[in-house]
Image (cartoon, rainbow, N blue to C red; front, top):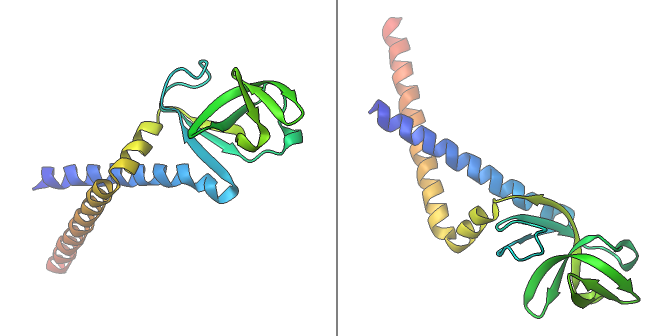
Length: 157
């Protein structure tokens, strides 16, 4: 039974940590940042696969040559470096992009955590069930441990 408790304590600690990481990744949304997960390695070696790139809205006069930006072409969201600026059109990683298609200027990255976010997005119900199960078991084990400690204290008095 002791091994069983330790395993579930460990699993619940991992679940708590992963939940905290998930919340921390989405917390920047409160401050106007959005995230983009790099799904392939051909982004001119700017970011490795499964990197989370945070970006925020940028005005025309704040986007300069060599800035890293997130932009949209058709339905595809891409990241790239601004190569040149000409009026309302930007040359980004070999693509001509209008300002309206620039989603924002990149600010921060988190390397390799994109895989975790993708898993949670694609399996959200499974992730919630696993997390709640571990938390419930942790609570039950905590209550049982507290009851045993109270009984020991009462028996010694």
